Length: 308
Length: 251
Image (tube, rainbow over all chains, first blue to last red; front, side, top):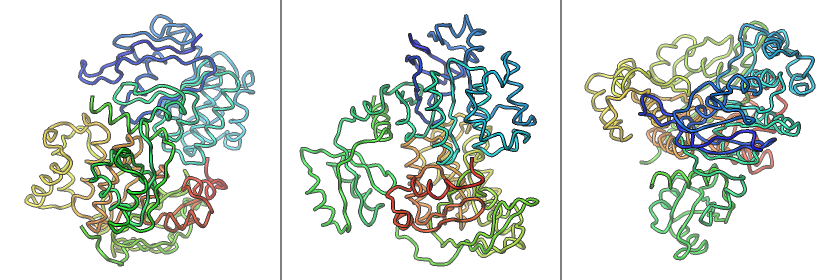
């Protein structure tokens, strides 16, 4: 059975003026690592707040471990672990005091569930007497995760745990999540970083409160409708302008040191485009066929959503 | 528009240092940035980026070392520095409870534009961003992407020598993120120097040069291409990881 289900959830603010969540349905299986991928304002946090029983939906139903988010909110609150996007521990309590506090609130002790947090807590232990407010970003994030885990939740809900965190800490954090998944904990995690999508088993791509696509990352990538090319040349700014003004080019977006390009392949081939570019004065032209990333798919789907 | 060929330095930092008690947040940092350059200022969490940026903006006095920003001395002329720069961050950019036009007028006024200049500038800005129908709306009601584009345009309203951008694209959708960089390129073409921090490694590629700070020192500074060569990899992500992995202050 699914551990988390949402059926046609709608949430509006300002008397219906702002539609934050627009008819969203999905299920997360037991032990699954599921990602909500979307920018700020796409509805991620509203979904988290509905699932954690902190916000009532306008319509639709949702449940966790079979318990309804409205009727059974007290049971759900005992069973879940929640790490909000905003750091919400007590800044003026120490690392150890925060942990003891949350364990006590959930009627348990740090000792009882220590095995679950041990690998993370070891890194915090040298700072256990430091006030939470004085920790670095990465350490705060680890402490918040420990506090969310201390009562051994069945479902862990993490709202943008890696936002504003550097590449090294982000990699470590995803390693930790993999470990928790292996212990059978169901995890819902949201992120604005598209590269983290591949680390989830399944993902939902969210934009303006609606799910644009939901699947395994490799299946989402397979659904990209065009052949995708990566291109570079000596003048990347001009290359983008030249490509965008070419009627046979369908799309052109910068992706680091390459532009990702789709074209009308009936009319244009890699070879004759390269020739054209060299004739227009570009040097060191490289064109190669590549596999799309989740970000390519996200941009494509956003374009589709805007047309409809 | 042709990029201004101007090799003059707008940032010159020499052994810039900031201590808090026995903690050295920024440790003898030396670097230069040219006019019109897009300079990426990267680093691990806790590496000292924010402290360094505060000193460069004239908001925090260094413990030792020297720096000149837009030709002004960081110790003696912090007020002139503040007039010559623009600043925006993900956290602080615009007043949410003022309208679009009120924000433009407020910041334009603070930066000392005359009423006439302000009128011309604000008309131009509203036109470029396509905000004609939104001028009387509260900033809080705008989507984040629009807010960030407006905040950037306001930060360069007075045509500063340098604009400091602290994680300007955090949380922004992938299409808007790229439109934001179009604005950065346009400002750079006008000769404005861009000093930008980001956690998106693809954005590091859009910079002319980047520095990577670890534990209070600049561990690497070069063009993205040269850095990738030096660390034998084709991804900036990997360059950053190799440099920051050993950080004592990270995590």
